[in-house]
Image (cartoon, rainbow, N blue to C red; front, side):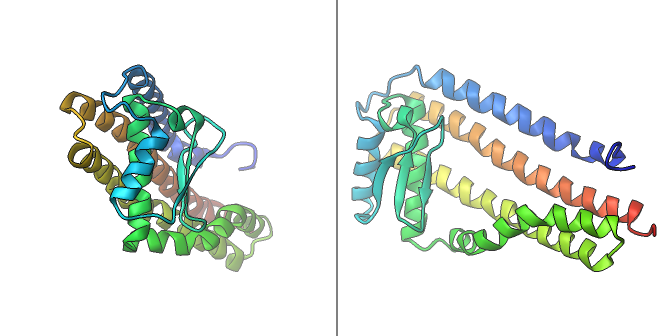
Amino acid sequence: MFFFFDPTFIILIPGLLLALWAQIRVQTAYARYSQVRSSLGLTGYELAKRLLENAGIYNVKIEVVSGFLSDHYDPVKKVLRLSPQNFKGTSVASLGVVAHEVGHAMQDAEKYPLLALRNMMVPAVAMGSNLSWFIFLFGLIFYTPFLIRLGIILFSLVVLFTLITLPVEFNASRRAVKLLETSMLMPEYELKGVKEVLSAAALTYVASSLTAFLQLLRMIALAGLFGDRR
């Protein structure tokens, strides 16, 4: 019956509400500060190039990637991928996002331990994310305790990954603010906007981590409710 009515779904509500609030904050903050042109007079691409060169990082390419706020750093291919609006953008919001991604490139160059650990976990987490619920539900349906436990263990890797991601993202944001403040001499009123945008973005990672943890609790609850029924 839990396929049609699952009372444990209520466990996820706090995470879903936080995720919704985080998305609203990101969109609001980015929209606001994307209208504020930075006094630095640089595009996102120009800022990324300058910051990377100042850090002595010359093996990272800068590319455009489609999508809204799809910016990310690829540590495997050594590529800084920027969304179109941030690649060409000159706003406070765009430069803040770009500096954040440069922060990840600096972490990689310095072999920041938590980033290295997160990168090592990617293959296992990808498998756990895709298979954990399938294995878990299969175990519940056919009452196979081993599969139930295996599903929970695999999803636990996903939770651990989201927890490790938090300090990695927070560190990249701190680096971004410091780079813009000390290397680029960005004015304080612009830095305030950068901090607001990056703080909103950080909240999305907190929401993701909370939601994953609550999903794990839900799996454990389901195992207790249905796992002992033959």
